[in-house]
Amino acid sequence: GEIQTVQRSLLGQVMTSRPCPVCGGVGEVIPNPCNRCSGDGRVRARREISVKIPAGVGDGMRVRLAA
Image (cartoon, rainbow, N blue to C red; front, side, top):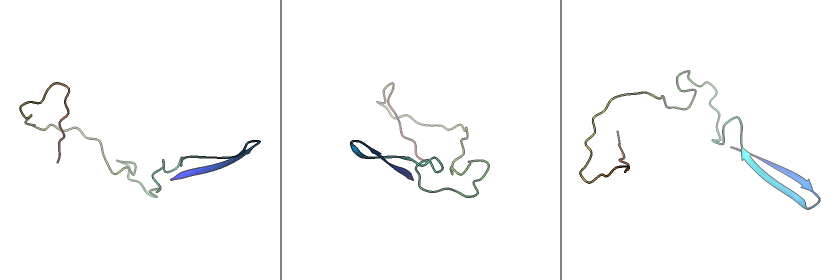
């Protein structure tokens, strides 16, 4: 998931870490990702749903939807 690098300088050793460029810091690489999701496991799709907004919800407030 991450790459650690140790650099030596006059002041001593400095250790830095950064996310792996291959897995993006996730820690695993999918060997044969599907073409639709590229191994992400999710596909973006648009669909229309009807939602009843409860009374008292004001402008700018967020409403969480669950499937």
